[in-house]
Amino acid sequence: MKSVIGRISVLLAVLHLAGNVNTESVRAQTLISTPNKVGNRSLAQSPTLLAQAAQTSDIQRTLDRGKIAEAVLLIEHNWVKKFEAYFGRNFPNHPRTVEQAADTLSKIATQTGKKPALIYIVPQPQHLELVLVTPEGEPIHQRISAANKEALLQQVQEFTNSIVSPARRKTNRYLAPAQQLYQWMIAPLEAELEAQNIDTLLFCLGPGLRTMPVAALHDGQQFLVEKYSFARIPAFNLIDTNYAHLENSQVLAMGASEFREEASLPAVPVELSTITNKLWQGEFFLNQEFTLANLELQRQQQPFKIIHLATHASFESGVPSNSYVQFWDKKLTLEQMKQLQWNNPSVELLVLSACKTAIGDEQAELGFAGLAVQTSVKSAIASLWNVSDEGTLALMTEFYRDLKTAPIKAEALRQAQLALLNGQVSLIDGQLNSSGGRIPLPPALAKIENQNFSHPYYWAAFTVVGSPW
Image (cartoon, rainbow, N blue to C red):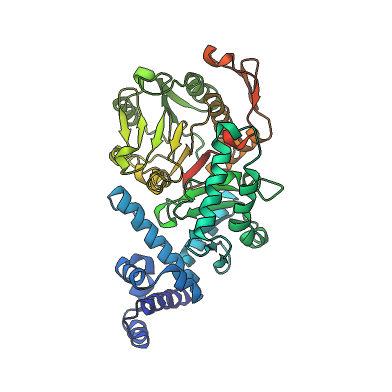
């Protein structure tokens, strides 16, 4: 009964935001006539009411009133609609109140042993809004006045450029913006994260932030990836929160080392064969066999839970049809991916190991952040920029090795990133020295000078999109 009354109270409060109901009258009628019906429906299952509230109020005014739970509902609603508008389709939606979201996080913590929290980071013209939802207690709101939208996005651009730019790749110029962004986005919530022993973060990021390399945020002593595993999500209501371990799952690995219009990827044959023959179980197909028709055929013959595509992928400005994954014989656009039906049978993980994104472009951000939901996979791993061929090989070999033992996908990626950061993987004398031994490189890469992969350029690009579980 307490849960029913709590949900009714939230419903009444948001109706009050719309400013067109008699609160007392509705409360009386609801409690007397249909308590069970209202109690079994979350507020988020009433899109008409939420749309009305969004039209007559906004997130900032709701937070000003101390209505944090209602503000979360508005954020979720607005961002779901934004992704649906971009992709031109309605997505399967799993509406949850804040109370229900906290219950879901608590259930996941019990199942995985990893304790997650949900962080909404919402840029506003005059400040930054942070909202934290954890498995325990009430949601927490912090407003960062120094982080107005202009200053925030300037720091994000400087941060990303300092990591990606070839001229800066051997420097630590990224540290200043990395630390400033950490102070704005993470530090205000960190006491609560530590108090509740949170170790996994779900970032629900607003415009201009969705392709930020959060792994490389820095507290002055450590990178964020040294403290937490994490995923970026389009909205909590758009992800599959069911947990399933990947052990005994098969991987379908496909890719190309040669392209007509794009740069060659000579490490791909080694990447595919190492994953399927040494690190995991599955099959791989290279170059001429890397066609959409063959992918669909293989999926018909066996319900692969993991699909690994070692090829060029690009998230571009404009409509979804501008973004694509390059197969041997054609480009598969982001718009066309919805036709693949990777939810039947379900794909637990899609890995795109050579991506690039139009950093700073809101439409490209929507495409990248919406990758998992558009392809109907539970989780995706992709890179924000084109990492070197050998750097990608280094991270992918570590990731699949860690995926065997890590409780969740995001933790497996984190362990792989730490291996690169801490110098446990390096390129020496034409061989890749990994935690599992030495891997000979193809002739095209064997003459590359010795190098380590500790700079964020090599590991911070990779991120989990969608469910971290």
